[in-house]
Amino acid sequence: MESKLIKGLIDQYNFEVESGYIYYSMANYVKDKGMDGFAHFFDKQAEEEFEHAEKLRQFLFAIDVRPDLEGIKKPETEFGTFTETFKTALEHEKEVTKRINNLYDLSVKENDHRVTSLLQWYVDEQVEEEDHFRGLIERLERINESWSGLYIFDAELGRR
Image 1 (cartoon, rainbow, N blue to C red):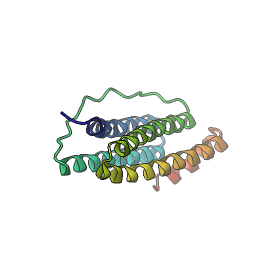
Image 2 (cartoon, helix red, strand yellow):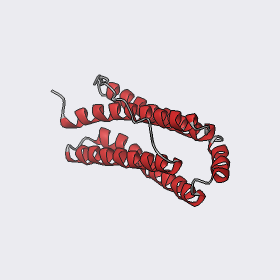
Image 3 (spheres, rainbow, N blue to C red):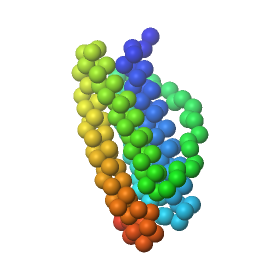
Image 4 (tube, helix red, strand yellow):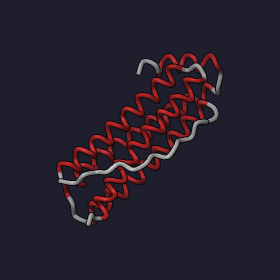
């Protein structure tokens, strides 16, 4: 029988895959509005989420655990304004952070140094992700959905 911690890692592996799926949906949403740079940004976010899932998958195999994939629910397809889209992404990242922190706490409680070491990378990554999204949202709020500002920002995000 799997420990609560191992089950949590498998759940997180699946959540990282789901996160990529969510970011692809956001990319599709903004691309449909003609914002290729925004779409490129969210495509890159999706790729990062799949990389995070792969890191977990490889770790689980390294400790002799096969992580099974679960079904992925259909993500939202409408996200409101561009600012609201990024705010939704930030809220999603906060959920990821909460889950990672809970797993980290559990790894400490179970005294599993292997998992604690792995999860420290994710803790640090989440600090960076949330900070990045907050900065992007601040800039979007300054633009205030002005098309001229959005087009300039779109071009910048396309160079990510």
